[in-house]
Length: 271
Length: 284
Image (cartoon, each protein chain N blue to C red):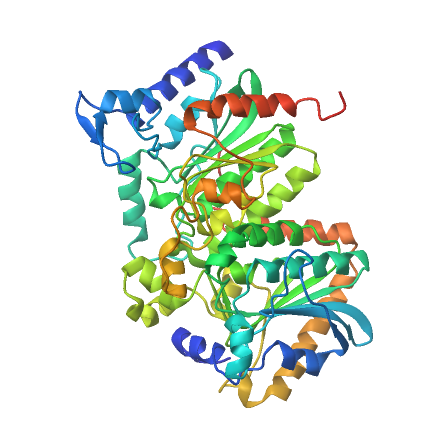
């Protein structure tokens, strides 16, 4: 297991050469067909989604998209989705349910976009709706946090039967900079924040927030992408095989219980 | 026997209400809305609304419940649910104790059953005086227990939100409460039960992005700030001044996210009407 500090992992999770959603789709799936638009007002390139084959089985793949080039990054709003992106994701998930396809989500976002138009079109409502609807999907849902998973913007794709993380990915309430700025009014104390936030994969595994860690090279996933894809494939296959044995209603019930248990206080509450 | 307890509860609730909204003497209170001064007594008698401009002052959870529920009907749910420190965050326990001493609350949420014009319901209120009403694991748990209790008892649910968003000191477990409460609401909704969400100043962050936005009917108090990202963050991101009235209740109504903006003094009547309208489940 990697010996990196939390702050070093944040840097690795944000590495510009780190494999992104398009790399994962190319490596793990075939016949990918991209589906665009929320059917309400627009297409949000910050979320990429569609249908593809995974080892011959039709699946729905959805992920946040950070661009690789400057041009692509601007077009994808640096991986910060608006409400249209989340509504598109929900549309694809409901469609997956209709056609009884498993859902894979790939999460790498610094958060939902805090913009004027995003607010005007209901960023909060879009995220809330996804949380509610994902909790009751009757098909297998597996989420993989590949880089940064920040805030409700990440969770909106993360209400899954299995939540997996790459070894150096991070998952948190918001960025360490934002955390330090809110708590201490000093974004400069972000390294200190990293140490307190419990945002690394091993910490989250012991808190029960995630279910499994996918190993990556000591120097980060970008050093040997092919090896990382193999490990991800192995993990996805294993968890999918287990979930495919469950009925739809069992999956939804199990997912409810999984999130229901999170943050239950130690002392038993009196009625 | 039950009547005695009900009366005792009513008295305790009234005492708490008075304490929460206790405004001494005939001093003047300045309104943050219009800047003018009014007699404290006048503000207090108008349910903490400025008599000059209609600005709605923030009010405590128990006082809120006393303005909504029939006298004597209040029964608190899970009042002893303990505040937690799931990440063992340095200095957090001390801050919690200070907030508890200051407000007399255990945590930022109070949940109860009671009646409104004789109709039984489950009501939850977030109190912005306790860590800005932010979502801790205890808040998420209390709200979820209230939703589950309403589901089991087939009762309508009313949640009053007032929240700065996530509880920083509980980090990722604060985030998980969004999924937990939203999932509980999915089950509640599947049973054909009514959920009314009332948004009060301010409703932001993780609370907006979970249970506050999922009401069958969404009401808001006039002037309440309602949004996912706070105005300061948005201004920093886009580098422009935000338009007048941005993210206020009236703006959200205009943009399709609120059914009605309801002044505090009319709220009880509107809730009562909505409960009556949903009583027979449309089957006559």
